[in-house]
Amino acid sequence: MALAKRNEGAKVNANINVTPMVDVMLVLLIIFMVITPMLNNKVNVDLANTTTATAMDDANKSDAVVVAITRDSRVYLGQDQTTIAALGTQVKDDLENKTDKMVYFRADARAHYGTVMDAIDAVRTAGVEEIGMLTENTEPNGPAIPGGQ
Image (cartoon, rainbow, N blue to C red; front, side, top):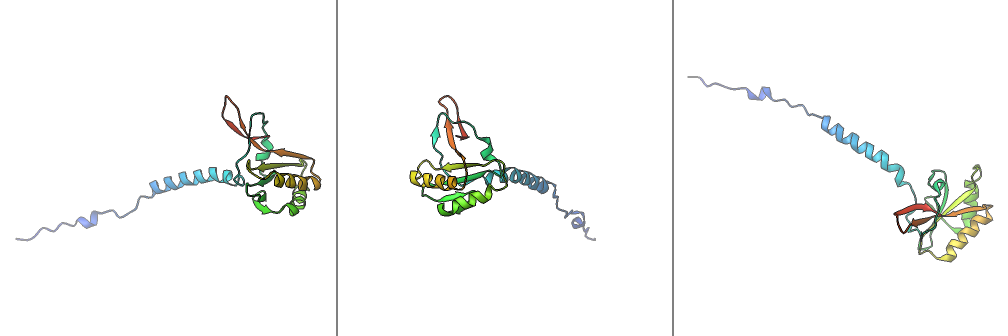
């Protein structure tokens, strides 16, 4: 009597289905593409709360000149840390070819008042006539609106 040999190994399909992996990767790519422009926003500061702020939408533009002052008196022009002595010339260089000569300040609520005033004076000596102080708008009946004056 002979043994019946079954060849089941020949029927196995060893191909990998990559369609679910591609779907997951595309979803992750879309998420990162949406979130990345928001991440370059700014230096992390806790803005002062006000109830009479007006919206300053131009401060959110990518070419806006924004000076940030942290609570430990560090001064940033955009994302780059700088000193108050060099701030005026750097702002002047940034505003050289722009029609809008507005500089926005994002000062931490607990920042030293003297540091904020020194930074404003440095920007004013560079020839800037208009500045905007960015705050958080806290309406008594509504949610906070970031980017107010």
